[in-house]
Amino acid sequence: MRPNYKNIETLYLFTLFAGTLFFIPAIFVDRFTTVPSLWMQVWISTGILGYVLSRKGRAAILATVVIFILFFIRLLKERDIRFSFVHYTVVALCCLLLLAGLFFIKKDSASGRLLIWQCSAQLVSRKPVFGYGGNGFTTNYMDEQASYFTKHPDSKYAMLADNVRHPFNEFLKWTINYGMAGLSLTLLLVVKG
Image (cartoon, rainbow, N blue to C red; front, side):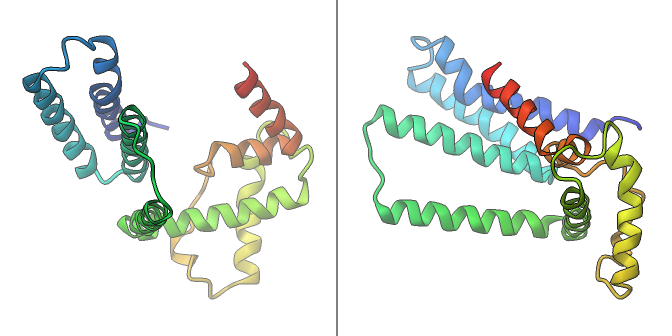
């Protein structure tokens, strides 16, 4: 499988964007408090953000929104500003609109992933505790997809189905391969490690 250089480029620029908002000011606190340097930071962030958003990568857009939310939470804490119930409601509605918008940016791709996740959920339901083993997803997914289309011959997903080797979700893949036990151990190592 060839690497997707578009995604690597977007990841690199996104990292620069996050750096201009968080890490540069944290390292050079005294140097980045003047008005010209703050404007430079805003222009650099805006340029990188514009480029990342123009690539239409849903993960990059979602990550950008998360970075903005974290940035504004930090800013509000520094200025001791508190949110009311109305603020939280507006933020929640905006997040729901964002998720809906991300779905419709590439609707066919998102619908195809829903099919993959639906078939993957069936695989997990059959062997939830220990999974199918090291190559469980790769070995069993296509049979599950075929079974799905046998049961639903007029499915709206028929035109989106393909030869799938990855569920586009590492947690789901890990659960199919190693079950809830393997996923739990992995998460425990990540959180405690």
